[in-house]
Amino acid sequence: MCGFFGFSGSPGPLVEKARAALHELRHRGPDQWGEWWDDRVYLGHHRLSILDLSEHGRQPMKDREGQVHIAVNGEIYGFQRWRRELSGKHEFQSLSDSEVVLHGYKEWGLRGLLDRIDGIYAFCIYDQRLNKVFLVRDRAGVKPLYFARIQNQFAWASELKALRAFFGPDRLTPDVTALYDFLTYLYVPAPKSLYRDVYKLEPAHYAELDLATGTFTKNAYWTLNKTPVAISESEAAGHLAELVDRSVQEQLVSDVPVGVFLSGGMDSSIVASSAVRYSRHIQTFNIRIDDPRLDESGYAQVVADHLGTDHHVRDCGREDAGQWVDRIQAWYDEPFADTSAIPTHLVSRFSRERITVALSGDGGDELFGGYQWYWWMKERADAGRPRWPGLRPWSARLKRRVGRGLLGRAVRRMEFDYVLGELEVYTRLMGGLIRDDKLRYARAWGVDPDYDDYWYFRQHWDPDLPLLTRLQVLDFHTYLPDDILTKVDRASMQVALEVRVPLLSRAIIEFVFSLPEPVRYAGGILKGLLKKAFNDRLPPAILTRRKQGFSIPLQAWNMADTAGLPSIQERILSRDYAHVLPPLAKPTAPGAA
Image (cartoon, rainbow, N blue to C red; front, side, top):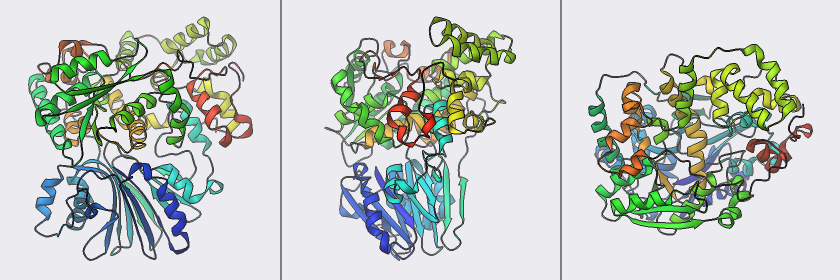
C-alpha cells in the first residue's frame, strides 16, 4: 500500500508545494518516497514495501524508454501470471506487482490491462507519447483516489488532505450539498467530496486527462452483471469454497509478515480457515471490548483454537478508545459517522506491531446477504401494508412537537410502516436522516427545495431485481465503498498496515451476483450459501450465531458529546465542521424549525 500525489502544469515553481502535499501521505508509505517531473506533470509517491523490498520497487516507475510513468497504490493479485506472459517482450527491473501495471499498459493498452488484472488498486499513468494522464480505481473501491480541477489547475491524490495542502484552504470552498448528503448517508457519497470541484473517482472507473486540450473524461471499465445462471445450491457452495480458497492463497503472497483480522464473525473466520490451508503459521488478531454486549473476543478465541492460529488479543476500554476519538475524525478529511472506525484503528495499530499485511472479511455481508436490515425490508414488503403518503405533513409536524421520546418513537414507527417510500425506509434503517428531519439544514444552507435527497441510492436502485438482491447491489455500490472500505483504508493506513479483502476478489463478486437469489440465501436464511460452503470448517457456534457489529459503546463510555443533538451526523458537523458551515447552519435544539 502506498500514497501518491500528482498535478498537471509546469512543476518548476510548485515543486516545493507539491512535495509538501505528497508528504501529507507519508503515513501510507513510510518505507520509501520518490518523485519525478517534466515540464507538464509532477508525480510523487510514498511507498509501503510489500513485494520486492529493494530500491528496485521504488516509485514512480518508468519504462526503459522513459516515456510511460506510473504511481500505484495497492496490490495486483495473481500478478505472477501476467509477469510471465509479459516477460518475453518486456524487461522487468523489479519483482514488484506494480511493474505489471507498467508493462501491461504498454502491451495491452489501458482497457486491455483493466480487463485482465484483479486486485485492490488506485493508480496513475502518465504517457508522454500520448500526452495524457490516466487515473484508475479498483472495481470494489477498496483504494481511494481523489482529483480536483480548481482555477485551471488539475491535481490528484490518494487522500483529500494532500489536495487541501496543495491548493490551500483559501482556494477550497465547502460543498453544502455534500454536507447535506452526509446527514442522509452518514458519509459523503461519491463522486462528491467535502469541497466543490474536488471529487472521488468512483469504483471501477478510469479518468483521462488530455494535456494538450485540457479535456477530461471519465468512464466505467467494469459493470456488475446480475443475470442469474442455472445452478444448484450444492454446486454453488462447492465452487464458492474453491473461489475463496484461491483468493486467500493469492492474497497471502507477500515479502513481509501477513496475518488475519479475526473478529469472531463468520466472514473473518472463513478467511482464517482458508489461510491456514496455505500457511503453517497464521497470526490472528482481535480486541476485547470492555462491554459484554459488544465483545466478540470469546468467539474469536473459539475459532483460533479450532484452526490452531497464533492468536493475539488486546483489551480495549474507555481510555484506550478515548485517546483516538478526536484524532480519527481528522484522518477521514470529511464528515464520517461510522464509529467502528475506532476499534478498526485499534486492531490495526495492535496488529502492526507484528505484521504489515492483514486479511479481513470485509465485503461478506454485501455479497452474501448478512445484514439484518435486508430481512426487515423483506418483512415490511411482505406485510403488504397500505401506504398513506398524504400523512407526511402531519407526521412531520407531530415529530417536531413531541421530540424523540416514547411518543416520538411511536410516530416514527407509524411513518416507517405507512408513510415512507422504500428508499426513505432504507435510509432510516441505515441510520440516516430523512428530509423531514433535515429541514432546518436545507433552509439554512440554501439547499434547493427540489433537491433529491436519495440521488445516490437512486443511481443504483434497480426495481427489476428481486428485493434482497436489489438491496445487496445497492450496498455494494454505495455503503461498501463509501463507508466500510473507506473506514478500513484510513484506519489501517494511518499505521501503514495493508488490509486485503479476499471476499472481494473479482471472481467471487462476479460469481455471487450471477446466482439466483434463492441460491444465495440457501435455506431461506441470511448468508445461507456461505454457511453451506464452509459448514465443515468452522464450529457450529460460529455458523449459527447472530451477526454482531464491530463497535464500541460510545454512549455508555460517555464519549459522545450529544449536546442535545439527536443524531451522530449532527454531532460530527457541530463539533468538527462548524468552521466550514454557513453562519446560520449550526445545529439547533431538537424540535427547532
